[in-house]
Image (tube, rainbow, N blue to C red; front, side):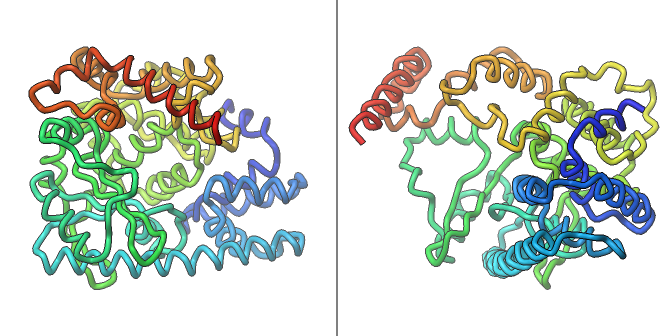
Length: 405
């Protein structure tokens, strides 16, 4: 099978990291144990495995998966490091969860509907334990109409916008809301970050409203909130992972657990994905589950995978093995030209089709240019023709600062 031959061409440490990047449900537990034993029997480099687990943010999941397999021979040094890192993360996750509880209670008191996603609530939904998935920050979604009230609510609870934020004029703010999708906050009593979302990356106004209409009431840690329905959740996970070329394995581990448990009607999910232009991220995510976890592809009418560009599979496999963030995460011109071209091609294939007007609008938008030149709203139109000049000016100033440091 092609999917097995690709994985066999990787190091045993990489295969072990993939095998332990999720916690398989009972129906798949024996298969996961067999895969773990095969990788360990091949003699993995445990230092490499520890580095991969740290990069792919699977340490807590990996340690939990390894502990479930009886009789494994793990070097004491690797065993100790895994346990210590897992314990450290789980203590940190408990603190983040407590902070999220306080935020959700604050929104409830203010009467603002809120939808937490990713982070501790996703960990709980997928694994029934908010400490297993590793995450960098907290994520909340509110309706666009509730954004001003939500910002005020967070500020009242001790959160403030990150230092990179600067005031915007009315037209600049409208452009920001149209092109971006979240505000970044930090807490005054610690380094915790929170992203306040009003839409997802590829959302239209209609799709945002529809997702809220389909959301379901949920309770976590005795806090009431809205949650994405199962199909919206997997489409978000596929679009988020696809946007980042799936360069962290734990994103695929989440999807693997959901698929293995049979939580989603994939035909219905595919039909909804087609209506929003998200079919390629969904199909690519499911195909990667077959490549890496040997999970069967859902039976979808017409075998839509035959028309899926193979580049959407090759690029994530390459990103997973590289153990670094792909160039898609950077706008730096210092990145290798061929890498920027490759990821530009990938992004073009994975994103929903858009009109040329929307594409050009995104190309000439950069909020940093508003700080370089603060034009009055009546001259806002001038940012588009001035875009290359403002970008060059920012680059020159950055080079000047670097030269004097």
